[in-house]
Image (cartoon, rainbow, N blue to C red):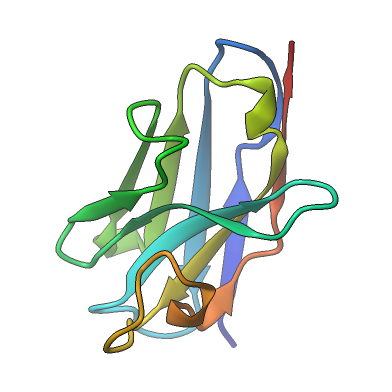
Length: 125
C-alpha cells in the first residue's frame, strides 16, 4: 500500500520560512515525478512545484524565487523549502507522486497517482 506522509507545516510570520517534507513508501518510485500542490479555503487545488527523477524542476510563477523543491531518491522523499512567506501562501499543502504521462504537464493533477494527506501552512501578517 502506497503511503505519502507529509510533515513540516505550521504557523509562521510573514517573511519567515518553513520546510516541508514528504516521505513515500509502499512501492518502487524509480523514474517517478514528485510535486507539491496547495489548496486554500474556498479555492481549487493549485500547482506549486515539481521535480523530475533526474532533478529538473518546475515552479508556479507565484512561488518562483521564494520556494525550492528538492528530492532524495534514495529515501523516496521530496522537500519544499519555503522562504519569504506571504499571507497568500496560507493553504493546505499536498505532496504528490506519479510516473508522468505523455502530453500531460507536471503542473496538472492528472500527472500524479498518489497523494499525501496534506499539511497546513498558515502565514500571519
